[in-house]
Length: 380
Ligand SMILES: Cc1ncc(COP(=O)(O)O)c(C=O)c1O
Image 1 (cartoon, helix red, strand yellow):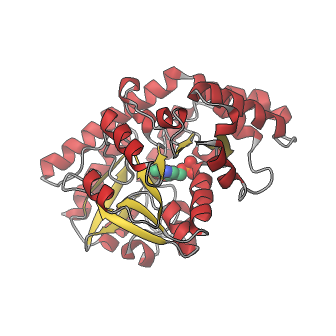
Image 2 (image 1 turned 90 degrees about the vertical axis):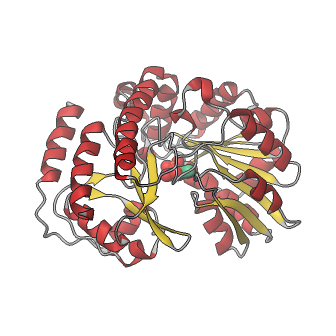
């Protein structure tokens, strides 16, 4: 089937919404992961037909043509558990990352790494430290197991405040979570500064570098903390196939760390969680440089368009380099969620510093153009 035609048809139908079909709160919780604001917690969505998903930082261009082909060809193996393919894939990843297979854990989406690390750390008690706002799953798991979450606000440009983070390390800080580029702001701690900071902090505590969005940066700008794992530092790096590779629904990611840290996470992993389809698609996606380049180029075009819109409105936003942007909610969050959904768009509202903020994921340029028209109506 022709994907672009399908998307266009679907997109047109999504704009022809009239209201009617009620969707339960649990549906929205599943779609959104979990509410991050009072507005989301109280909001019962109702929509009719399809919506344009600008709420989960997905890749609207994926899976790549190569991944689709590999999935069709690999179907005959989907009756098997993926024991051997996982071992083989570990070797591929180890070679790519310049480490041994013992440094790698293949996971069911990087959410699993966040869960495993949150569990491993949470069970030890003490604290996890992170900037705020950031992607909170690891800290949520750790808190459920009675660890403390120490938060350090981002700076006025919505970047990580490295000095404040360094000062917030306490004797019982078991892990520092860094999301670079950061979700929900899309902002980046650049190059050497990031690696120097991670190295210094890893002498005091385990550093967790969530690099879900790293590949949105140009290859020459991508500085992974894997370089520190290679040197034997106390660092865990988390990667996913959900973002630039466009395979969110196939659930595949991996962690890279010292073998003893990897073992510590792996002890909580359930049986055979890795799926053949995800592995099949991920393997070819790793080699598909054309697709990742296309995603970057198209995302940048749509991101620039949207950031320009925010600038014209005079609304503050951090300099996002990924596929999401955070800006102050121009109206109350619940109204924004309801009115944007009524017009066929799903976005998110976050609470931060006693205010509400909109986080909009970057869709196609066509979707963003339609979204700003709708948003103008919502905030008029
Ligand atoms: C920073 C960050 N880390 C991890 C994840 C989890 O992604 P997945 O479980 O699909 O790999 C997300 C998802 O949005 C994210 O934004």
